[in-house]
Length: 295
Image (tube, rainbow, N blue to C red):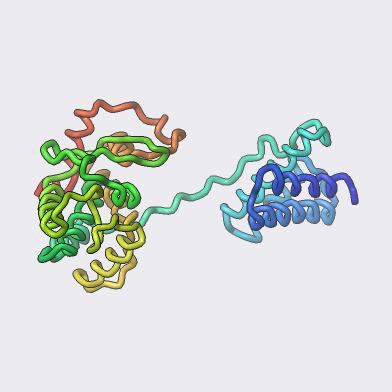
């Protein structure tokens, strides 16, 4: 076993015992690094910038997949960083080797017309139908994550000013406005809920037994409701409402920074790109541009 292979053995142990990577991730790293060794040996190339570029060109031609190439480069850069820290080399040969820019997948959305048709056609004749109507109106009105919606409590809602206190990822709290259509649906459902259970429930959205509704249940209800009222087998899911919310506001001319605030993104690398907005400005833009706000 040569030095490179011994370092690979040690690196795999490091990933397993120290980094606690999953077995699948470790296997992928090991295969990527071993493939690199094999190519360099077969082509009699040095592990330098020229040799590395030769390898990258080959794997890109073979896979035609930027994500695959990026993963392999990252695995090798990480491996040689390990070797460097352990005194095996003086410089990481992958320093300065950039990963290919991954094309961002455009999120699926419902059009404004589709969204309005779906929401307007929803029945509202009983407890379950009123609950479902309120759920979908609020998802579209706020762009909330499904977990944020199912954990919403009555104490988080300011009906008078149409504001929600939302606890997002990382326990990051934000205030989100909602439109009159969503407020009316919420109030009607809340009245029906009080009549049914005789007491005020802690969580806004509950099932027939009064227990907090689950994320999975909302996903199932959405798919069934969409198929029923739209006569469509289109795959829909709660996060589709979040994508649609953001896209529709952009289409109507809302500032991207406002949408960033409304969605409550937890990625600091993203949020640091935007300036902090005055809350009154955020509220004004929301009420100017949200499609359901203008009915």
